[in-house]
Picture: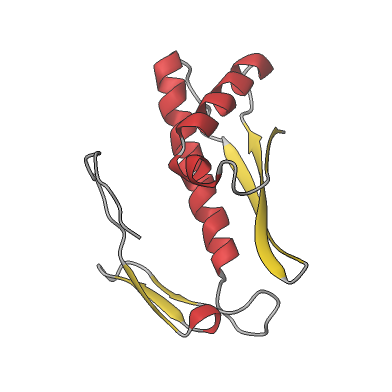
Length: 140
């Protein structure tokens, strides 16, 4: 696959993974070293679905903060996102589906909805999975 770069790259994450779902992944800067284990396995590692949920929810919250600043809305310090990423199997094919439950306490529901809707259009993770992964984003 060839990538065409028309954008300025502001950061590149690099990892080295061995052993797949039952292995280890390490970032090139040494800041991330994680054991991996298959979902439901007795291993003490995490799995790609948990890592995706953590990355997507953190990125989405960052997108919300950006959007809120642009809207001149102060987000409360107790903003929280609960992410769920399902590994699914149908007809011998694996796929993902995902949900974000977003809590923005103290912000009017119409303003919170506008922030979440704009963050969904802004967040790089959300853009990457749009039209590829069934997603539900809910204000709670």
